Every structure is written in C-alpha cells, then in structure tokens.
Length: 277
Image 1 (cartoon, rainbow, N blue to C red):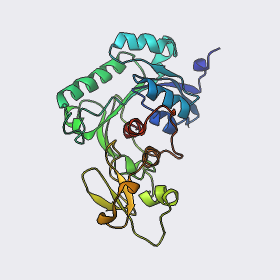
Image 2 (image 1 turned 60 degrees about the horizontal axis):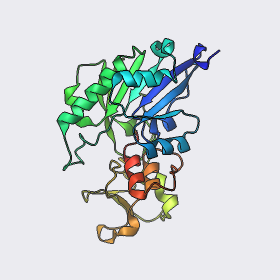
Image 3 (image 1 turned 180 degrees about the vertical axis):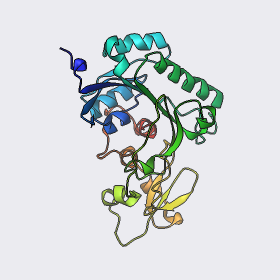
C-alpha cells in the first residue's frame, strides 16, 4: 500500500519551490496528521540541486511551470490523481516583477498575470486547500476575492529576525499562530560575527537606511542586493560588513546556514536566499 493511502498522512505539493524554504519550515505533524511533501517543483536546475542538498527527503522535480496540463501530468508521477482532493498545494511564484526593490525591472502587469496563472493552475487540481505567497504590492488586486487575502508581517508569526511583509492568499479561511517574542539581528548573527555584547551595532540595507541590530523590528527585508551589518556608526561600514549568503539565510529563518553546490557563485546564492519564504 502507498503511504498516501494512510488516513494519518496528508500530501502537499510545492510549486516554484526555490531552494527549499517551505520544505525547511513546513509543518510535519498537526492534529495527529503527518504532512508529507509529494514533490517540490522549480524551473532552475541549480536551485533544484540546492533544494535537494538542504532537504534530502523531499522529491524535487525540475520543470518550467508554464502549462497547467503539463504541471498536472508531472505531479501525477509523484502523487496519484486519486489523492489530489486531500492535498495542500502551495505556490510562491517569483516576486521580482512586483517588488518595489526592483525599480528598473518592475512590471506589475506581468506579475499580476503570473500570479493569476498560479492560482488558476492550482484550482484545477481540485485540492482541499491551496495557498499562495507573494509581495504586498499585489494585494490590492486580490483583496476580497478569496477567503484569505491578507498582508502578514511574518515576524509576528514565526521566529524571524527580519521585518518582512507578504501577501497570503488561500481558498480557505486561515488563522495564523502568533509568536510571543521578538528575535533580533544580534540574536541571529551576534555570536557568528563576534559582536561584543556591550557594544552597539547597525544593520544597513541597499537604500542606505540603518537600524540597530537590537531593534525588535529585526533587519530590513532580505534581498539579493547590498546588505550589511556590524558597524557601530554609518561611517564605519565597509566591505567587511557585507552579509554573506549564509548569513542572509539565517536572517531568513534557517536554523543553520544553508548549503549550496560548490559550482553556485555567491551572487546566485544571495538571489536564491532572497526568494526564500
């Protein structure tokens, strides 16, 4: 018998999976049910390889999500169609075209088309629940259209040392647990970077804005752009303070620094980390 035939197992499918943020942080058991990922799908080969390294128990499929029928055919190879009605589907389609950080390449109309496609693609599975995450800038186009269409500050719902707001959509009404304490940049990076407990430090984003590493807000949103931490004053910032991909991964919520294939350069690693949910 298949594991999917068990009453205490609920399958999940992750589209646009990236390097595996959803897989790393996924619930594995809830109310007596085991939530098991049947497959995670992404279009970038290096990203798929990175996903496998960090989440070896999760099947990863490399394909471009551009045709809904083709996606259903691919999923069927990992999760038989008879189990789709019980499944949880999640999409985190690319936010590059919608984010305000991408001033030169921003294209809201294309981002809206891609996000609408992702929703319609998931709806055709007839699954028990689907969820979608993307940037808040898209919220105005979906507000009131689904049982859940909200902008959430992720720092309020998970132990995250980062001020990160995301749009969450779902065909079901969702309630998010709240965490009871704030995690700071110092909590996450202080020991790793050798910061003195008695000294003040700053974190700075690509726009030149600064904030204390002890701020309850955490760091600014992690992007693939310039980001640094560890200087005591603005004038002290230098190249030695630029945060690595591993350090950005920790700010994104990883308990341990993510690992990458040796062939993946640092700029590509930072790009992958910036897309983590």
